[in-house]
Image (cartoon, rainbow, N blue to C red; front, side, top):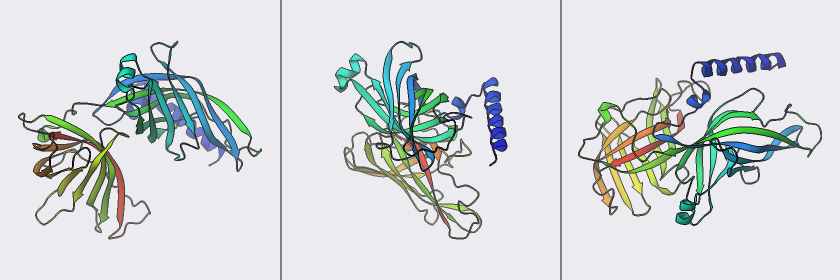
Length: 348
């Protein structure tokens, strides 16, 4: 793309962002996590720097660091942000956020700090600087302030990128200051509001929630995509303890939505089986519909789930096939795997 076209694109993007903000629709709204997550705390950087190294005539990000301050009290350092290319080899992983625990959390957890790592799942470019982004937590370290954090928004970024993408001297190092605000979100301990047709009977109450991350497998039948299979690993929260797996068995004769299985290996071995008896409800054009399943069987000794009556799949993100093929022209029998996340609420 020519330089003039790039400048025009940047101006158009800036105008769009300004228009959205003026009308009360900032990119922090566009980059929100799925329903079922709530704001926890917001911090801003101080003394932030990105370090680049000249490699193959291009600047390569190798490290980053910043102090984290409260947006309410700018005088107190409450944590740190760090990134290292060696420890974060995946290009989507954007580093580690470490937060100091308050005295009560420190006593309970036995650690002065807690930390999370996260990956970018959605971003919007800001001309001349870092992109605004939504990040999903990929790991937790120690309990405390960041213990239940599920998503992080990177907002209001400034700087952080070289003025030019090319460089001439191999191994030359460049340090670029940056600023950003990070909004931490936590997974809710109660389910979000659901469409009326998905409401469970008032006689049952939520007993456990599990975060699922996996893939949906689609097959093209010559006219449209058919869902053939779905699989996800189950965690207590994004990046948390792995507790089991979820999958959908292919639909049999006379079945409308297939059979759903939840296999929980941690802490006790238990399997819950359910079937969808009411049509799922789409709450987003880009995500799997929400649904309620009626439990038809369960095995194992898990005290929380042995009396489970229903499971809701809520807070979905992704999982739908694009109308266009990822490789161009569609052909009968073509398979496509689409990543998705969801939160499963068990009722008993």
